[in-house]
Image (cartoon, rainbow, N blue to C red; front, side, top):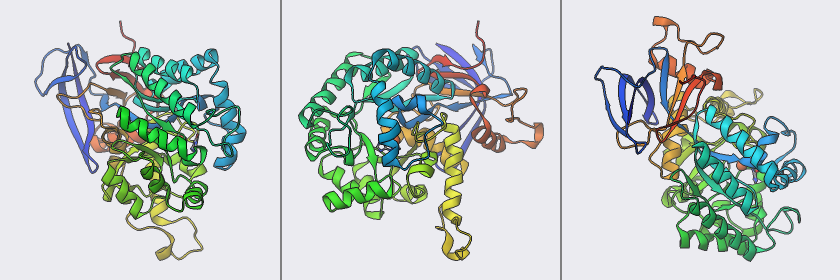
Length: 438
Ligand code: GUN
Ligand code: FE
């Protein structure tokens, strides 16, 4: 049991910023918040007036083996990018020694950016996928780890795919068993067909049955780009969402990455199934051919989390994705082509606030996954990120009485980098941060 005194900034709803000034948080040995009160008194950790405490960030879409190409390779369209850069790199990450070095580096950096929950696509290989789960468990990161299933002879290379659908389902089942056998309270498996273009009907159907039999969550990409969207129409005669549904993959807590081209019917199907979208705004600028209509999805009752889509997105932290989500929504609302009349240029009612974006990065992601993280409250896990707002040399700075809590919150979301993050806790364990502790 330990106590933290801190000013908490968090978003209990998509439109409400809550500021709890100097609250005293009691964290139990079970890693959960036992009580929060305004009472004074000594604390094990007092974050003072120049540091704020946020709930831990939930990154709902990361490609772990793409970590070494973060920041590069974004000059090609999605299909070419996969074949020329990404599949060769993911294949290298099936070599255990290389994989371990990537996993160690990536998990440490993501924790330092405040990513307390991560949803990973690992590799097609069972062993290196289990190694990633083990790395997260040891480092103290909450994680859903998926072995990537892909078997289509025309859309995947012979040196990076499942032998056939039967082998693919068998490997996914074995991966689930190995991750469950780690017996970590933080790490769980997730069934991961890469996307419909890379999978045969038999593999998609087999993984749907595996999800039903095991009740393990599902993740995939859905209607990301014009190309993916039309692939589903051409091959199956219906939308990508309807295809996933027909194979039993649209389930409660299914994470659909991107979803930029989902129509109103698709959004209704997601809401009914209690599936949701991992919105990856920066990646979308490169691959999606459109801005995801996040407001429309939220209005349709769809759970929306945020994703970095490393390395389709070139930035590691989720706070920067919040800022990108806001920026992208403004492009969508106003439109981007000045030769089009203002009244016809954009999509009215699309803009997101910083508050809504941060809600997606925390409670929205938790709701999508069906976890109890994303908010600091009694009974929930103590997954938290402390951010200094007075670090010398940082652009993030609280200017005395000029900045109320709302402005500090906006500044934290738009300006904080890993150097400003002093502490990161997951389930009550301090796992990262710049503060030196005795
Ligand atoms: N669709 C299938 N695979 C991928 C991937 O690795 N990244 C992105 N952004 N889209 C995909
Ligand atoms: Fe992706």
